[in-house]
Image (cartoon, rainbow, N blue to C red):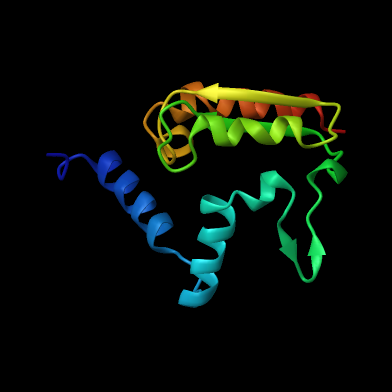
Length: 127
């Protein structure tokens, strides 16, 4: 449909490059990550261990901007929101935007509806 539209073709190439630019990972590591993070929810439950040390989200005190997509089927909003109560950040903002997992940042409306909010948040906290 959009083969004669240079902007659409450029956008497709950019998205395709991003989607296919993966980090090599062994099957065992992938299975463990999926099991620990998705099935067992170890990070949020306070049971995630990295390099022999338990990950303690409450030690996070940095400013936190959590951008979530209301139609995200990979990281559903209910999961993405839960970190807000686990960290110790005093300055935190939960920004809910339209779109799905990829569309919220790279979709046709991202420049108009997502990125300006992120930019505003970052500028307010820049030196």
